[in-house]
Length: 249
Image (cartoon, rainbow, N blue to C red; front, top):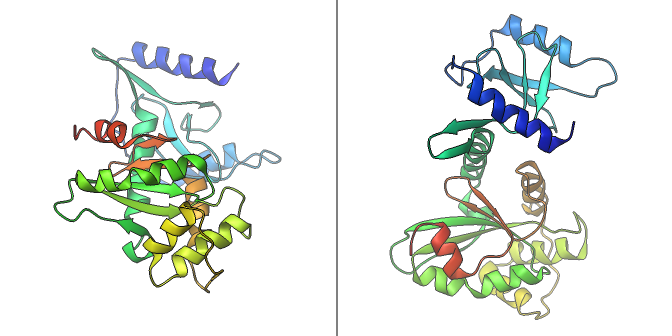
């Protein structure tokens, strides 16, 4: 069955199941070990990190190392890959994406401000976005042109490095040079305007770690915009469109 088909099955299950359990109830250690033993079968490459109850009685959210969230029986003898949807009077609600939003927000909250390149409003900050950024990306350059307008309207832009060509690439060195500079905002502005800057890859710069974090959070291209609630908005947005996404129009 295709991934889209699995998603449909989950939606149907949500509509039919009457009994709902409380989410975030962790499996007891002994039960987790039984589930882990069943799912980590030889040759599968699966590694279970943790499990907790889902919104469907009898199914548990299972977190895999370097893998998607799956839904499994308590014994681990069956599992489903795909997003879990709730059926409401207003339509479908993607519960799996809501969980990912929360996880993204929590992980981004752990990043120190000094490890980001931040463009802040002069007045009140009404909202902020975190942006995984590569200065060689055309649409990142276009997004950056709208930063003054976002700042003017109270939106803070927090850049994180995401060299699409990977660690050690020319893009990596350029981004590291901005992050390592005494005036990172000015250096980033120069890079976006295609002005050459001296290479300055300092020890301990956060570019590689931020690239890895982006991959963990599901970034597949740049720019990748994440709101303060953890919602990911992939791709370019004009300042006006992003203001609308943030409910600030």
